[in-house]
Image (cartoon, rainbow, N blue to C red; front, side, top):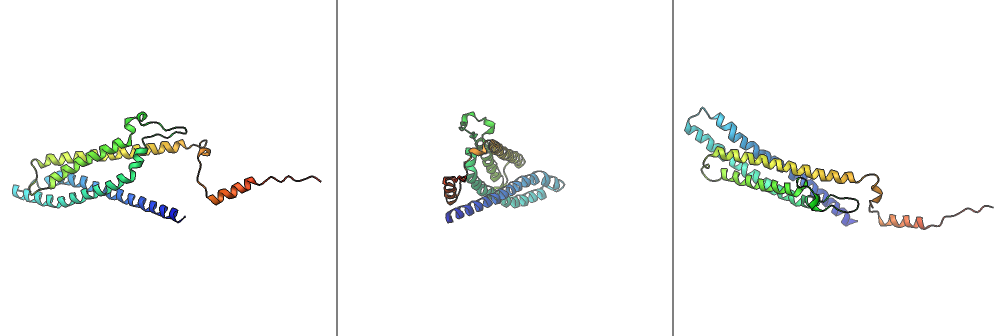
Length: 217
Protein backbone atom coordinates (compact mmCIF):
# COMPACT_ATOMS: atom_id res chain seq x y z
CA UNK A 1 0.00 0.00 0.00
CA UNK A 2 2.84 2.38 0.85
CA UNK A 3 4.51 1.76 -2.49
CA UNK A 4 1.18 2.34 -4.25
CA UNK A 5 0.72 5.70 -2.52
CA UNK A 6 4.27 6.74 -3.35
CA UNK A 7 3.81 5.76 -7.00
CA UNK A 8 0.54 7.70 -7.21
CA UNK A 9 2.11 10.82 -5.71
CA UNK A 10 5.07 10.56 -8.09
CA UNK A 11 2.70 10.29 -11.06
CA UNK A 12 0.83 13.38 -9.89
CA UNK A 13 4.03 15.42 -9.56
CA UNK A 14 5.29 14.24 -12.94
CA UNK A 15 2.03 15.37 -14.54
CA UNK A 16 2.27 18.74 -12.79
CA UNK A 17 5.84 19.11 -14.03
CA UNK A 18 4.65 18.22 -17.53
CA UNK A 19 2.02 20.97 -17.42
CA UNK A 20 4.60 23.50 -16.20
CA UNK A 21 7.01 22.48 -18.95
CA UNK A 22 4.28 22.83 -21.54
CA UNK A 23 3.45 26.30 -20.24
CA UNK A 24 7.09 27.42 -20.33
CA UNK A 25 7.50 25.82 -23.78
CA UNK A 26 4.61 27.86 -25.17
CA UNK A 27 5.84 31.10 -23.56
CA UNK A 28 9.35 30.59 -24.98
CA UNK A 29 7.94 29.93 -28.46
CA UNK A 30 5.78 33.06 -28.21
CA UNK A 31 8.83 35.13 -27.25
CA UNK A 32 10.75 33.85 -30.26
CA UNK A 33 7.93 34.49 -32.74
CA UNK A 34 7.03 37.85 -31.25
CA UNK A 35 10.66 38.91 -31.07
CA UNK A 36 11.29 38.11 -34.70
CA UNK A 37 8.11 39.91 -35.74
CA UNK A 38 9.09 42.99 -33.76
CA UNK A 39 12.70 42.91 -34.96
CA UNK A 40 11.68 42.50 -38.61
CA UNK A 41 8.59 44.73 -38.93
CA UNK A 42 8.47 47.27 -36.12
CA UNK A 43 12.12 48.27 -35.74
CA UNK A 44 12.79 49.07 -39.46
CA UNK A 45 9.66 51.21 -39.68
CA UNK A 46 10.46 53.00 -36.42
CA UNK A 47 13.95 54.03 -37.51
CA UNK A 48 13.18 54.72 -41.16
CA UNK A 49 13.56 58.51 -40.68
CA UNK A 50 16.88 58.27 -38.84
CA UNK A 51 20.29 58.66 -40.42
CA UNK A 52 22.20 55.58 -41.46
CA UNK A 53 24.60 55.70 -38.52
CA UNK A 54 21.72 56.10 -36.09
CA UNK A 55 19.90 53.20 -37.74
CA UNK A 56 22.93 50.96 -37.37
CA UNK A 57 23.27 51.93 -33.72
CA UNK A 58 19.61 51.13 -33.02
CA UNK A 59 19.86 47.84 -34.90
CA UNK A 60 22.97 46.88 -32.96
CA UNK A 61 21.35 47.67 -29.61
CA UNK A 62 18.14 45.82 -30.52
CA UNK A 63 20.17 42.83 -31.71
CA UNK A 64 22.17 42.76 -28.48
CA UNK A 65 18.99 42.79 -26.37
CA UNK A 66 17.24 40.26 -28.59
CA UNK A 67 20.26 37.95 -28.38
CA UNK A 68 19.65 37.20 -24.71
CA UNK A 69 15.94 36.72 -25.29
CA UNK A 70 16.73 34.28 -28.11
CA UNK A 71 19.28 32.30 -26.09
CA UNK A 72 16.99 32.07 -23.05
CA UNK A 73 14.01 31.04 -25.15
CA UNK A 74 16.03 28.41 -27.04
CA UNK A 75 17.34 26.89 -23.79
CA UNK A 76 13.81 26.84 -22.36
CA UNK A 77 12.40 25.24 -25.52
CA UNK A 78 15.07 22.53 -25.60
CA UNK A 79 14.82 21.65 -21.89
CA UNK A 80 11.02 21.62 -21.71
CA UNK A 81 10.68 19.93 -25.09
CA UNK A 82 13.06 17.16 -24.04
CA UNK A 83 11.06 16.45 -20.89
CA UNK A 84 7.74 16.47 -22.74
CA UNK A 85 9.19 14.14 -25.36
CA UNK A 86 10.31 11.64 -22.73
CA UNK A 87 6.99 11.99 -20.92
CA UNK A 88 4.84 11.46 -24.03
CA UNK A 89 7.00 9.23 -26.23
CA UNK A 90 5.34 6.00 -25.17
CA UNK A 91 1.94 7.54 -25.78
CA UNK A 92 2.98 8.74 -29.22
CA UNK A 93 4.18 5.26 -30.12
CA UNK A 94 1.14 3.43 -28.75
CA UNK A 95 -1.33 5.86 -30.33
CA UNK A 96 -0.36 4.57 -33.76
CA UNK A 97 -2.08 1.28 -32.92
CA UNK A 98 -5.85 1.51 -32.96
CA UNK A 99 -7.19 -0.70 -30.14
CA UNK A 100 -10.04 -3.08 -30.87
CA UNK A 101 -11.99 -5.56 -28.70
CA UNK A 102 -10.32 -8.58 -30.27
CA UNK A 103 -6.95 -7.60 -31.63
CA UNK A 104 -4.75 -4.60 -32.37
CA UNK A 105 -4.61 -3.09 -35.82
CA UNK A 106 -1.11 -3.21 -37.23
CA UNK A 107 0.92 -0.07 -37.87
CA UNK A 108 0.77 -0.52 -41.67
CA UNK A 109 -2.99 -0.03 -41.67
CA UNK A 110 -2.76 3.43 -40.06
CA UNK A 111 -2.92 6.28 -42.61
CA UNK A 112 0.23 8.37 -42.65
CA UNK A 113 -1.78 11.46 -41.71
CA UNK A 114 -2.80 9.79 -38.42
CA UNK A 115 0.67 8.72 -37.34
CA UNK A 116 1.53 10.84 -34.35
CA UNK A 117 5.21 9.96 -34.43
CA UNK A 118 5.63 11.30 -37.94
CA UNK A 119 4.14 14.69 -37.07
CA UNK A 120 6.20 14.81 -33.89
CA UNK A 121 9.38 14.08 -35.88
CA UNK A 122 8.50 16.84 -38.37
CA UNK A 123 7.95 19.22 -35.44
CA UNK A 124 11.32 18.40 -33.89
CA UNK A 125 13.27 18.58 -37.16
CA UNK A 126 11.76 21.90 -38.21
CA UNK A 127 12.36 23.28 -34.71
CA UNK A 128 16.00 22.26 -34.93
CA UNK A 129 16.43 24.10 -38.23
CA UNK A 130 14.67 27.19 -36.86
CA UNK A 131 16.94 27.18 -33.79
CA UNK A 132 20.07 26.98 -35.95
CA UNK A 133 18.91 29.92 -38.07
CA UNK A 134 18.09 31.94 -34.95
CA UNK A 135 21.53 31.26 -33.50
CA UNK A 136 23.11 32.29 -36.80
CA UNK A 137 21.27 35.61 -36.60
CA UNK A 138 22.26 36.53 -33.05
CA UNK A 139 25.75 35.02 -32.86
CA UNK A 140 28.89 37.00 -33.57
CA UNK A 141 29.71 40.67 -33.31
CA UNK A 142 28.18 41.57 -36.65
CA UNK A 143 24.83 40.54 -38.13
CA UNK A 144 24.92 38.18 -41.12
CA UNK A 145 24.58 39.31 -44.69
CA UNK A 146 20.96 40.13 -45.64
CA UNK A 147 19.65 39.95 -42.05
CA UNK A 148 16.09 40.76 -43.11
CA UNK A 149 15.99 37.72 -45.38
CA UNK A 150 17.28 35.52 -42.56
CA UNK A 151 14.66 36.98 -40.21
CA UNK A 152 11.86 36.21 -42.65
CA UNK A 153 13.17 32.69 -43.21
CA UNK A 154 13.32 31.98 -39.48
CA UNK A 155 9.87 33.47 -38.95
CA UNK A 156 8.41 31.15 -41.60
CA UNK A 157 10.22 28.20 -40.03
CA UNK A 158 8.81 29.05 -36.60
CA UNK A 159 5.29 29.20 -38.04
CA UNK A 160 5.84 25.78 -39.62
CA UNK A 161 7.08 24.46 -36.26
CA UNK A 162 3.88 25.70 -34.60
CA UNK A 163 1.79 24.07 -37.34
CA UNK A 164 3.46 20.68 -36.85
CA UNK A 165 3.01 20.95 -33.08
CA UNK A 166 -0.69 21.72 -33.52
CA UNK A 167 -1.19 18.76 -35.87
CA UNK A 168 0.70 16.44 -33.51
CA UNK A 169 -1.56 17.41 -30.64
CA UNK A 170 -4.70 17.06 -32.77
CA UNK A 171 -3.77 13.60 -34.09
CA UNK A 172 -2.98 12.48 -30.55
CA UNK A 173 -6.41 13.65 -29.44
CA UNK A 174 -8.04 11.79 -32.35
CA UNK A 175 -6.47 8.51 -31.22
CA UNK A 176 -7.43 9.19 -27.61
CA UNK A 177 -11.05 9.96 -28.53
CA UNK A 178 -11.21 6.85 -30.73
CA UNK A 179 -10.03 4.72 -27.82
CA UNK A 180 -12.64 6.31 -25.55
CA UNK A 181 -15.41 5.69 -28.08
CA UNK A 182 -14.51 1.99 -28.20
CA UNK A 183 -15.41 1.68 -24.53
CA UNK A 184 -19.14 1.52 -25.18
CA UNK A 185 -21.74 0.29 -22.68
CA UNK A 186 -21.81 -3.11 -24.39
CA UNK A 187 -18.04 -3.48 -23.95
CA UNK A 188 -17.81 -2.34 -20.35
CA UNK A 189 -18.63 -5.80 -18.93
CA UNK A 190 -15.53 -7.07 -20.76
CA UNK A 191 -13.26 -4.70 -18.82
CA UNK A 192 -11.90 -6.21 -15.63
CA UNK A 193 -11.16 -3.57 -13.03
CA UNK A 194 -8.66 -4.39 -10.29
CA UNK A 195 -10.23 -4.95 -6.88
CA UNK A 196 -8.83 -5.19 -3.41
CA UNK A 197 -7.72 -8.70 -2.43
CA UNK A 198 -9.59 -8.71 0.87
CA UNK A 199 -12.75 -7.58 -0.84
CA UNK A 200 -12.36 -10.36 -3.41
CA UNK A 201 -11.95 -12.96 -0.67
CA UNK A 202 -15.04 -11.72 1.17
CA UNK A 203 -17.03 -11.74 -2.06
CA UNK A 204 -15.90 -15.27 -2.86
CA UNK A 205 -16.77 -16.42 0.68
CA UNK A 206 -20.25 -14.95 0.38
CA UNK A 207 -20.72 -16.54 -3.02
CA UNK A 208 -19.60 -19.94 -1.73
CA UNK A 209 -22.07 -19.97 1.17
CA UNK A 210 -24.82 -22.54 0.53
CA UNK A 211 -28.27 -21.24 0.03
CA UNK A 212 -30.55 -21.98 2.99
CA UNK A 213 -33.94 -23.23 1.94
CA UNK A 214 -36.64 -22.87 4.61
CA UNK A 215 -38.39 -26.10 5.49
CA UNK A 216 -42.18 -26.05 5.44
CA UNK A 217 -43.64 -27.46 8.64
